[in-house]
Length: 149
Image (cartoon, rainbow, N blue to C red; front, top):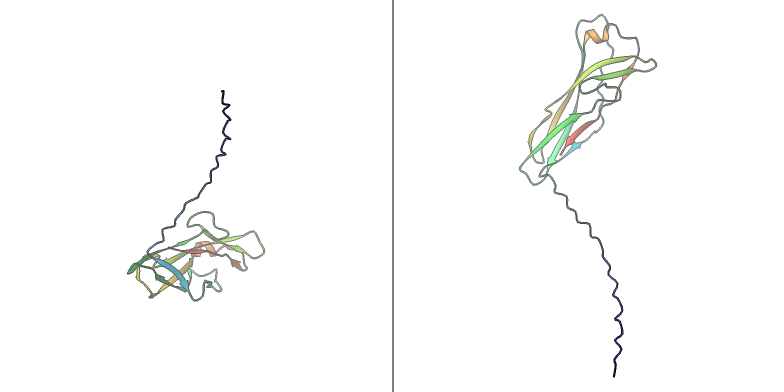
């Protein structure tokens, strides 16, 4: 007797993809405290002055995390009208005129004990060579200060 072998049905093969990810957090977790928007106002600048126009304001940061000492670093962008790193400019309110200025952060980086407020001074300067021949009027810019981590 001849047995007919029937073909076994083919089993469908299927696969699933499982994305795997993880984020390793910094041992330091720093944030701005209080006002996150401050004004650096140079006020009225006398074009006859031989002294730089200066201004300062402050921010506060606090760091937390698992590290006893938290490391931080602050950076500035180029503002709305800057022409590159360190080449900041304020724009005249109604004319296509610009007023160069500089800004520094002190301290810009370092270590701080966790859960302790640290005052950051934001200082700016406009040199006489930049404002003595500037067009009369109001100038403004907006900077972004980034706090890492």
